[in-house]
Image (tube, rainbow, N blue to C red; front, side):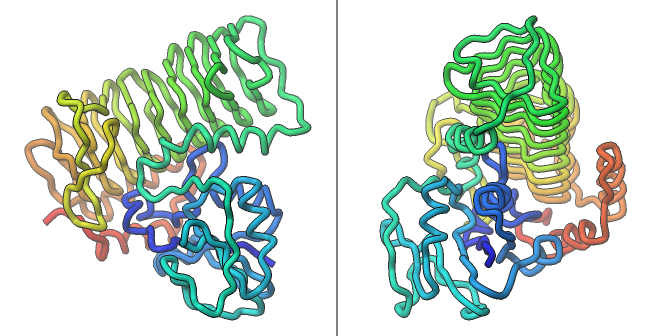
Length: 397
């Protein structure tokens, strides 16, 4: 028995975040979608995703298999409904399939996530379905994802002791410190949601935090940081300055002053000192953002949207990102003025123009940054990035 998380036709719609991971590996709360499924079901979890990603994110085969829409955040009720499916049944919601159950390797091809095959018996799910279908959905669903994961991870457990020099506003029971976590001389407000501090993570003195907040394992909030929830910072992040309703998937730095709002950063990103994002147009109108599915700037229907940045991308000091900027993977943005709203993968430069960085130069920088977190830049990592450079849309032309 196993869970197979399918990209469900959303891979291009969630670029640049899914250049380097399946949809089911995204993180909106404390846990990634795959980690939540593993925690809830205690079953092996695999991925049905783009072929070039499968070496790093393998599928699972054999026995009873529940193939699940990878963009759906797995609430307890949804997970129970999925596991109740028998072979030959499909879980539906509003005419859309959410999960299929098969047995013994049947239906090895990817399912149709618009219309289920006629030979599946349809079972209706009537609960709420938070789904990640566009990059901004990560920060929009962040609050409910943190609340769900907080309950999942803390039920029946006791938090480490919070130091007496902290000021707590709201319910102190909504603050949970994992072993090794450190929080001193900070203001923690749980009025709007819980605050979870991961193993060996640290909230340094003078921080002002409004939940919901998820601070991942070994991550740090730097001194005097101002965090407006809901925010999720994955493992090994360094976060300072002012951050509002943003998600950082992991291993990334926003360690200095500057504003990051309504934004999503991938892994191994670095924002230089005093990097600022605009998250609201002066006209208060809808934000346009680059769509890799349409290969054009499209209306997002969002009034608040800052920066979406793929893995291994960086900004120099004093970089200014316009509202709704989308940067691909391995981009290096620097110089004066506002860079364009779409920054292709492997582009190095800024407002005055870009060049495409050589692979050796990029991979050397990736390896050096990853070594600082004691993570090896593997052959699979290099092969994945080479594929993006050679085949993915939206490069420097």
